[in-house]
Amino acid sequence: MKARVTVTLKTGVLDPQGKAIEGGLAALGFAGVDSVRQGKVFDVELNAQDAGAARASLEDMCEKLLANTVIENYAIEIL
Amino acid sequence: MKARVTVTLKTGVLDPQGKAIEGGLAALGFAGVDSVRQGKVFDVELNAQDAGAARASLEDMCEKLLANTVIENYAIEIL
Image (cartoon, each protein chain N blue to C red):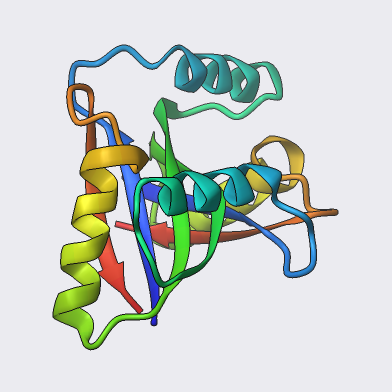
């Protein structure tokens, strides 16, 4: 089973990497970019009985390793 | 206009970071994880006349800064 986990910074958490990309885009002449925020994506292949079991397992993985839930949100998508 | 750009490694390109996460998950007791590949996601807010113009501008940004098209694919989603 394939799944995609997207981890993004929570609103209000500073994102210096995103700011640097904003600066880079402005320097390259891209006008009209209001904000850039960077996150992570994990493409996971896993064995699970069904989509529900896969989602439960992935939630556990996010809580324990993939995301820092103090500052990050995660979204799980079963493909 | 809000858009999400997802940058992932092309098939066949080694992903040591993904491998490390796989190892970490196995060490935490998650059985049945076949593979993990890590990518990046950019949440961009930009001013554009319409979705088409936004997409064209984002493609240009990907080619020039956001993705290394030698080893990475990108996908643009207008939200």
